[in-house]
Length: 110
Image 1: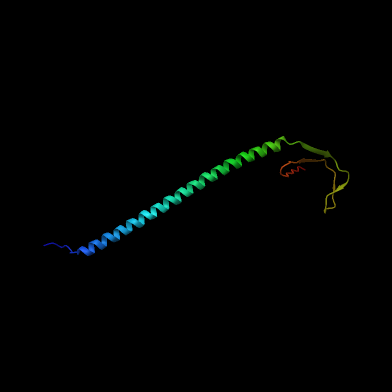
Image 2: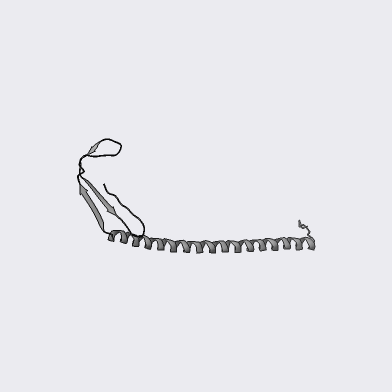
């Protein structure tokens, strides 16, 4: 004798309908994930372009700074007082000032 469970045709059709619905849900989820992946790859491409553009701009700015004239002031201040400390500064000082035209960049070396 068989230990089989008898299932009506209606129950089989219901199980198949549920399975079809699950398959449809999974296909929709796969499509949504594909779209998210494509969007993420597009964003990565945009960010890589931005990085490349910024790298080029940084290099251009670096070259601009290197090509700017530098003005140097050298000397020994006579009895100049350091602000707020009341001490006298007698050692030689060197100040380098660099200015850029487009963006203000001031570099001081004391």
